[in-house]
Image 1 (cartoon, rainbow, N blue to C red):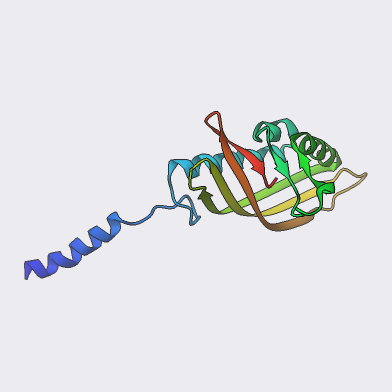
Image 2 (spheres, one colour):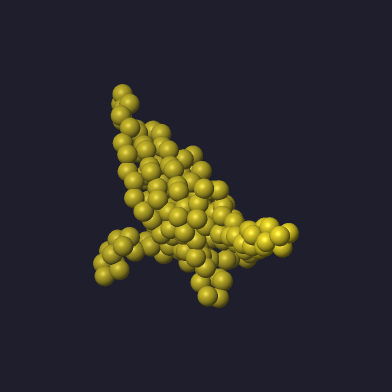
Length: 159
């Protein structure tokens, strides 16, 4: 009889030992690499809210390149210098902004040198206009690519 009682207990213990741990309320596996990558995404979110172009640029690799979803149209492509220009231009028009990022997935390349983060964002902002009190909203899904540069994760695309 004692064996019958111990068998379910042993099964529960064995199953709980194999349980995957997740980061916060996500379905992203809790490991050091995923935490490092998500810390960089959080630093980006804070820099955007603070309208700090320099901090965003510090999080990007020198070979950053963006084709805004139009790979066949090079007229809207930009590099890190173009990102600086876009950030400064955009931030100068903003009176206030809030960015919420909900990470959904982190994947590593087979060689572990790149990370791909899929997230949902909600962006609220007020334009820098006289007597502007109206908040505007935007939300969407996004995917960013990061790579290791001198031991740190840096954005190379997707911003």
